[in-house]
Image 1 (spheres, rainbow, N blue to C red):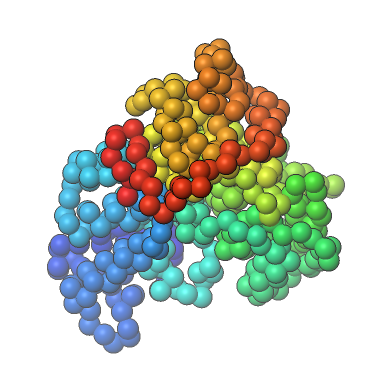
Image 2: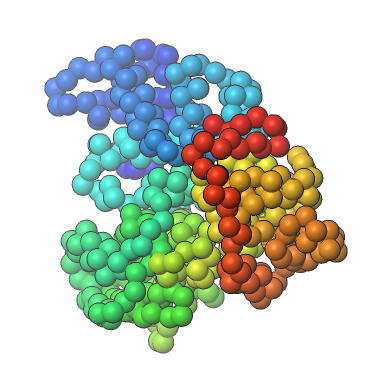
Length: 437
């Protein structure tokens, strides 16, 4: 029986030889995906592969600037229209390096789709991420994981979720595995636990992953699940005891592990946080913090992903959910599609002066009603306020100053939009001067 990592490698080989008919017809994976006794033609194999690519197409209404659109377009342009890396780069207006990353991430996702068809009995509901062979660190690139998480998050919008119901669903799926490992499970949840602001689909995947981590950490462990409401969040604590020494580092379970890292990225994209701590004796705690159901969307206009990741760490477990826009056109498109509650703006952007963006936002029918926090290394608070900024943060930003500025923005009354304004028919003019859409 072929293992998952080998299957993924062979699927990549199939795509690399998509126009080589003898190679396709004689490939072992083609036989695996065919019905018993069926002779699979090269054309049938090609259609099978391209149909898996079609499954990547995002649903209607997904922003054209989203990572999920880019992943699907990358494969469609390469294998349907026959474009090379350079042409795809021009079409999608991204770097060639980004095209190669997208191509790798998309192929891994397609391989996961095909694997689910071949082995639907092997936890098909667990999320598939790039570099699925979990211990092959040479293939685990953070940027690929980021793309996969962005794709899944784009298709799973944040909404109020019932923790008890989602947890019960994940337990039902994991029960067979829990019984196989002879684990003792105890669940204690308050009856009045508030709803949380997270996609139930993603929250379910995180719970499934947490159970997998706990069961992998020790044979016949005692697993306890407890939850409690806090000021603006719900904290779910999964304890496992004992834990094998090989799964314990100075910070607890291996946070660099692919599955742990994937779960952390997934829940952070929803405004939550996942951490691991040592428990008494030989145990460990996986602590999941989920924001309360009223989630505040913050659009971060900044080209530096490290700066945005810093903001995410500052706001982990809070009521604030961050969405990044790296370019002015993306920012203006997201203002209209996401309708963010707050915008943070870096004024030193490579493609356009941030002060101009601030002026354009204040002239836009939607953007003028959104509180804006200007973040800059330059001490120009007076200029920011004169152009319509609600708050000014001098870099380096601290966790306390960021939260305080966002909290003040939420406490202010929003400006009233003109009665004549209708968001359905008002064109948005980004920095290019051309309407978006």
